[in-house]
Length: 448
Image (cartoon, rainbow, N blue to C red; front, top):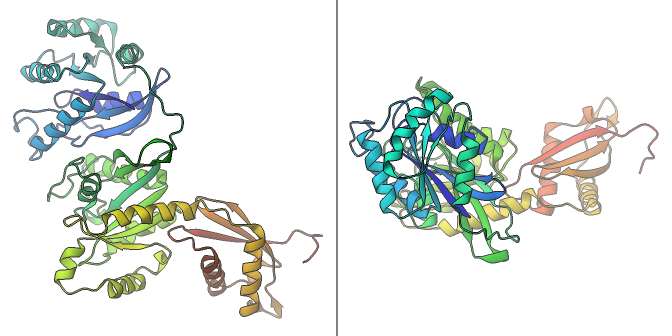
């Protein structure tokens, strides 16, 4: 897929333009230099062409511009985005006119040899277009746009598409599996992504809050029709509400992390092995459970836990006791530093996705419940015993089963748990949440 990247100095409106083109609020927009750090990507359609749109952090060659200790890393990410691009759009602020930093960014982009153009942003009115003309001195196409109001964006897209190489669409390409990677700050989410891809795709630092946006990274194993395709979504560390700062950036980051969970097919919950699940880890796991998402628990930094004499079997048992509501989720102990079990995490993700989309044969499902009912008597209340008539799988992702009974009020939580265990024992469903609803048998329906 062709890559179209948006680059420029800080605070020219790159993220606002990115969101306008994507037709969705993907990148964090805030009037503060250095908010965007990583490459934020989104697959979009431009006049019938599928492209990967990339938003980059503001390029500053002087740290005093953003006062961000990660300026060097941000600039490196932007440079890689330019190298990968089929077309590069340099976003400038038409109101402020040409600045020395604009000139330097444009010069660096032109040196790359990538086809490029200038989007003179903040031309909200026709009278502002005269400001855009100042950038024509660089000898590149200049288009006056307003990311805030959408003015001139259609013309920009036409120019971008005209510079794209011939389409080479892969009609056999399967939809990518969306995998959201969530956890507390500094749990190792970004390091995991970089280790998996064997490349510095996202910025890693010991500074809490390094990742701000939800960063989407396409990833594939194999090629052609048989390739396994993924969209990894690296999210900002989710802080406890009591420790949340009052800044809008933190609030936006939390919102994007929660949104990533809602949009995911599988959620990878990253925790620290030596530390074990903290209260915040449990809250995050609770959000995943509320969203009814397939999930895998990744216990990171296992090399440090081993130095403390920890054993995988004992650690897994302790985890199950501390997180009983996630008993269905596989636990993978791994180390980003050594690479231990990194490949196994992908196998666990695949298994969870398969479990969440599995079709349960109606006959086999009902036979499973029939055997379970014979092994353990159903609850009785005031002389009436719960009777199970039949069951149906009504949906997948999440797995949802409706069981028709004589009276749903007769069931107890313990018996519901028993039925769930019986179904899981028969069909597996590792990593997939299971919702069971009881419904009274319609009147007049023949009892089986």
